[in-house]
Every structure is written in structure tokens, then in C-alpha cells.
Length: 325
Image (cartoon, rainbow, N blue to C red; front, side, top):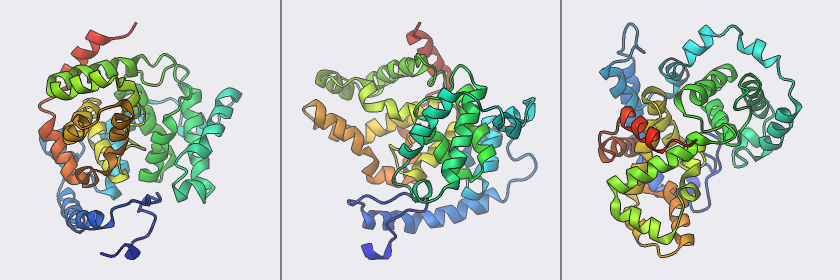
């Protein structure tokens, strides 16, 4: 299909880069539309308590939650709905408690930096206002975290997916307080621990790649911090990120490592072809352009084939091994 037949803005409002591969995207979408239709039909067959944990629901989530079901599905499978129902205050009541000027000013500084290539954040007033409300409300009710850079990208994508300010708040709360281990506190101990866990896993799964990266001297923090802090937003195509989040909300933080291992395996040859730090960093930065990464359905299939049987218990064991003081 000719380039001119496509909008320069994708379905989520992001401007396509100048080097966007329209032919590759056309090949992907011609197949993916049929997959989306088939998955929507399959989800419509679920009866009863459809969000009760089961092998069927796990399989359905891994194959993708239809976009019109995402808000409800994410709220239930993440535990956000339980957080909302058990809280003594409504979201509206919590929002009225915003009064910390330091948090307010820090968030206001970050708002214009959030997705500057997205028309919904740059051309409309309501979405930045919603983003501010979610971040400020969360920052005021979670005193340990307050506000941390990176949360703006997560909350921003939550809003693009759900179009619901209240749901985005509870989902952000579930992520930060229940699913992710202390990534956003001042010391970032959870993040630092998980970078060591990733180092251990890469050494086990891809020892040649691990040795090459070590010899070049790239700290994992330099190449992969955004993978953890932003949960692959700003790193991978948006639809791919949402497919990852489907599984993250249901299966927990092990999904981050399974995705990380898969990205490294898919790019093994390109990584090994690098000879100095700048090339290696560029290789990690350009992973979003891999054909299989753009084809989110194929990518998620690869995630569960290439990363072995990595369990939450294995991750927790490694976290205890590398836990920072």
C-alpha cells in the first residue's frame, strides 16, 4: 500500500517517524485486523464470572484483550477494582486532597514533556488535565512515592487506553503499590534489584550476549531502565505495549523479564555485531523497529516461547538474592 494512503498519526494519536515502514505495517495490519475480529468473537463467548482466574482466562489474556474490554478487564485482573472497592474514599474525594505544592509544581513541569509526539496531549486541553489529576491524586495519597518521573508515561498510556480518569488512577495505584516492587520510591531499590535480576537471567539464557555486553561495558541501567520504569512505553510500539500490559496486569512483574529476554533474543545478532558503547546503546534504542516487535501478536507469542518457564517464584528468589539494602 502506498505511503500516502496512511495518516502520519497512528490510532493512538502518535506521530509516525519519518523512517516508518508503511509496507511492513500494511502486511501486519492486514493480518492483525482478522485476529482482532476473531479474538473479539472469542471473548464474547465467556460466561459467568469471566474474570475469575483460570487457564482459559490466562490464554485469552495472552492472546489479547479487545480494546473495548480493556478498561473493565484491566480493573478486574490487576486488583484495581478491589482497591477501589476497599478504599475508604472515592477517587473524587481523594482528588480534593491535592495541596502539596512541591508535587504540584513537579508534575506541572513534566506535563509538557509527556508524549510531545502525541496529538491528544499537545492539541487538546482535557487529556493533560486528566493526566495531572491522576498523577497529583496518586502523589498525594501515596506518601512513600509521591511523584516520580516515569509515572507520567504510564498514566498517559493508561488514559489513552481507558479514556477514563478514575480507572487510570486505580490502575496506576495497583501497578505501583501491588505489581511493581518499589521502582518509584526515592532510593529506587526495586529497580536496582531488578536490573541485577535481569543481568542474572541474561547470563543464564544468553551467556554469549551477556559476555559481549559486559566486555563493551554497557551497564544494564543505561540500556534498559526505561523498560522497567516506563513499562516499555516510549520504548515499543503502543499496541505492543498494551498487549504486554494485558499480561502484566494478569500475571505480574515476571512479564517484564519475559519481554526483556525476548527482546534480547530477537536482537541477538545485532547486539553481537556492535563493537563499542554507542553502537550498543543505539541497538537497544532501535529495538522498536524490529518487524516482529511491530507485529505485536507474533511478538507476544515469542515472549511465551523464547523466555522459558519463568515464574514469579523464580523472580522473587532472585530478588531476595540481589535485594538492595
